[in-house]
View 1 (cartoon, rainbow, N blue to C red):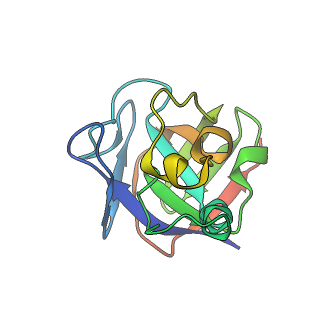
View 2: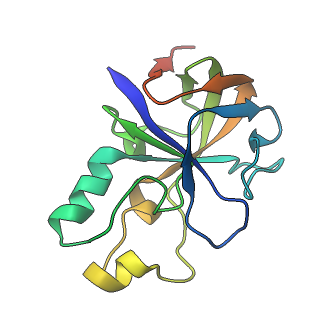
Length: 145
């Protein structure tokens, strides 16, 4: 079963995200308290722990939840294979996939360590459809229809 590993926010753009014990997801906003939250299509970013493990195998050091600027670190779901429009129930909240990957304008520290980064190709973005509080360990399910 897919689940939430970590919820991560930053109070300022351009900084690493720090883990929090729970996150409040709001419609037309994202995660309360996150600097990237706004009424746009990239309200919340997700990255799978399995993608982080790929980077570890390539020699990236110092990896922890939030270091790729992801809001939610997950496990048990190959996120980047989900089509745009897929609905995900994350704990109490309902979200919809709006974008797969993103352009990397400035290469991060991890890219400079190993010559690549997984967030631009394996990270996804969602918007909030139904509000709710999420916590590490909460299940993530694909909602049909």
